[in-house]
Length: 444
Image (cartoon, rainbow, N blue to C red):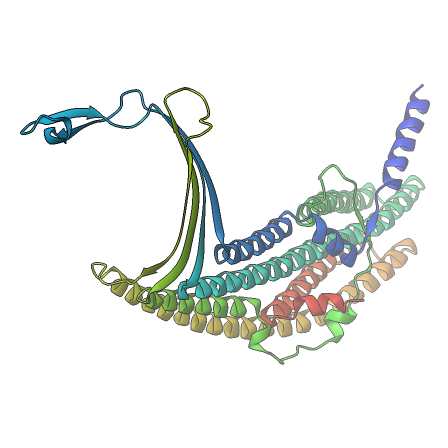
């Protein structure tokens, strides 16, 4: 029964693993385009911005309103009429005026003819729409950065885990061989214990690497927008060509930076707001038209013969004269907002150039470090293999094997750490130049 249960569990694990799609970096990025929550929100904001443009355009089109009213005058108003009308000169006679029921139906039309603020308002919402689209671009860029960073962390953790598996397998083989030699009396128990301690250390490192890999996968799922319960496996196809061989490129165009473009848009918005406050001094002209149908009667029913029509057209001119200096102070406020926007633009310029210089230095340093670490790793692997072979032939001690295996684990850990630093430094450099999307699209 135990054997049957084990086979069933193994079959389930194999089937579960078969449904786990293997993702490359570009596949992760493509998935994130349609599933990342931040991109979804940014897309919805672009739709809202488009609707606001339509709303502003609609405010300049004819505005037509319909109205209907029905009134039951419970108590008719009393009016005092001169007594001369009633044959009672020198007195005032109270008289109730009106009818009990009033009904009305009407239409009104308003159309702007001259309104400078309308065109500025339309320009303002169009600029705001540009800002929202730029924010979508910025969100996409950040999503590409975070997904790529998470992918590299997971892929490097996977490679480190696989390398530790190979070291553990070799250590296990050495341990088994050592036990056999101990049983034949060739070596001492202390030699077996040393090899076993090294084996256990490697096993512990592998367990930690497996945990790190699972955590990195969860982070990648989050950045992609992939549900946590969905299986995910990665293609261990990291290419050093785009990172190690490629040298740092100092070419830079400030206009490529989306943050700088967004600050330029903020400046345009501030300037438009200043114009709107100035245009508030200008008069506006609109056309008005109305038509009404009014009925009156003493009975609670729709009057049949007491309906009268009324219609009117006209022009409405509004000339601002004095607002208690509100318009003047509003102009001054918007002038200050323009100055703030210009300062923010300058600060963004300086920040971008500072980041570019720093990330360029970091990338060059990472390039130098990875070359050294790669040579150290190759040397550690060579020493480990030769030490194992010498130990099997009795030319080296168990202490030599333990030290060689420990050095190999340290070299691997240092190499993969520096490799991740290199990958992140390259992403940071491309992001600081505003060319991250192009760089990722050109990855092999």
